[in-house]
Image (tube, rainbow, N blue to C red; front, side):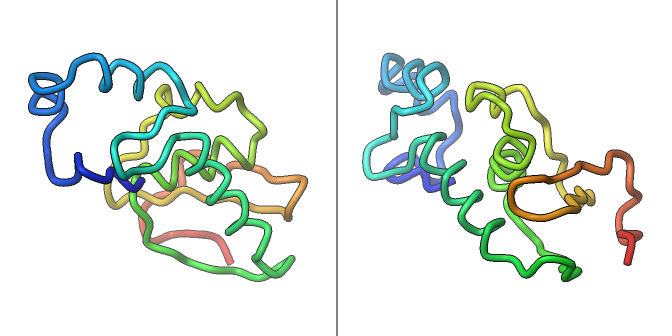
Length: 116
């Protein structure tokens, strides 16, 4: 996620400086931090990336946790508000299969053991 002026800062630091803006970012998917990207925008960007993939192609990507959550929200057609309810742990595999318009999520794939 493009955090704009908040990049590199903890949530506690942002909350101390601008609690209203942080609250808006965590509760309004259309709110973007100063110079940053909204959750809605991130989900749209992840969706465009998923749509660009060739059907049937197998790819392994290293992605930021926020991008992984956004891709899952898009792929499963979840409400954008679900973004904050998903945890994507660092260095774990998340597998989406299918194609644009119909994605499946494989849960529990061990790291480094993605299916071919």
